[in-house]
Length: 237
Image 1 (tube, one colour):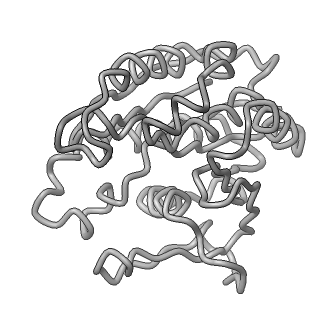
Image 2 (cartoon, rainbow, N blue to C red):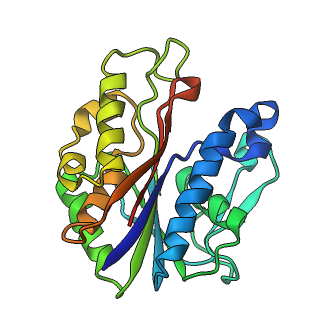
């Protein structure tokens, strides 16, 4: 059963070494993520599942100890999924899950075993919901750390250039995530999300499936669009 969830953005720029001189610009986002992880720890889960974007439709399962790296961004920062877990010889974590592993390492997470699941934009809402229900049923007390960004089209200099549909989409997503509105999240338009370069749509819809019947309350901790990309942090508990 799902007992808590934390929703966090997952730009590699959250890692200060990657952001370099621009690191202070995301201090508020980092602080919100740390606060969200505190809600997960307070829920005392038996299992933590980190759900984030992946290149393939997925689900891609990454066991405890799976390794990730930010060396592709020019910095020697390596992470692994779960403090104290044994090393895994499986595939490297996709960037979203690597950011999740970095966040967990930042707070020294040791409250429950950790595993990762990557999902891509080709996974439709129905399959996302089914995956979420399966994850929630894996233990008596399951928590999710859900990684993903909103649109990348908020300004002229954004990665996806300016799209007037981006701000309304992000506002609707922020309201839904802040209110733990399962129905609204499940109804997010996958085609529009793809056009707006939203990496969080599928992970958020996995959360919506996991939260069905859990009666969790939401809280919006952070919402902004530095660099023209929408970042949202929220908690469900």
